[in-house]
Amino acid sequence: MEKHQLIQRFSADQLQQRVRELADEIRTDYRNRQLVVIGILKGAFIFLADLIRHLNIPSEVDFIRLASYGSLTESSGSIRVTKDIELPIAGKHVLVVEDIVDSGITMAWLLDHLRGKNPESVKTCVCIDKCERREKSVAADYIGFRVTQGFLVGYGLDWSEQYRYLPDIYEVKFL
Ligand code: 5GP
Ligand code: MG
Image (tube, rainbow, N blue to C red; front, side):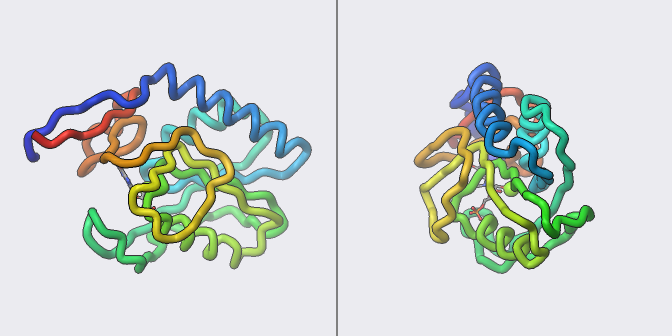
């Protein structure tokens, strides 16, 4: 691994506080609705776990895993599903939970994919909205934090499978 340093961007306390606020908003919006929460593997697993516990309303949970061809620094836009959702979502209200939206290519593709399954509605909740490389205009409905740039790790986010376990979010600074 290249020599690097981790600089804290969001503390565990800040994350918990913000997730609680998002959950309060979402709970109000989905009152008396059949909600299916869909997490995008792997990055969103910790954010989703915190979110549904703060939400504390009856909801179903499923996961999807996508692979995108292209380099790490450049989304090619060619995406495929390596693990699809398993629950039926036709006629249900879907909330997609994602770790980071960057170019927007992954999210735009996923929304098309899910809409093909005829849900009643689809909304998105992202922990971090990073507008550095936005190409597809996807406006997330619920946003934890906005950042302009930087490669982030921790709280589920990895760098070559490292650092997902960290309770805080850090920016990787290359030395
Ligand atoms: P997009 O298609 O929006 O460019 O890609 C979003 C995906 O790229 C996210 O789901 C995430 O997996 C990955 N990604 C984008 N920015 C970062 C980052 O700063 N740190 C990490 N660990 N992953 C990122
Ligand atoms: Mg991801």
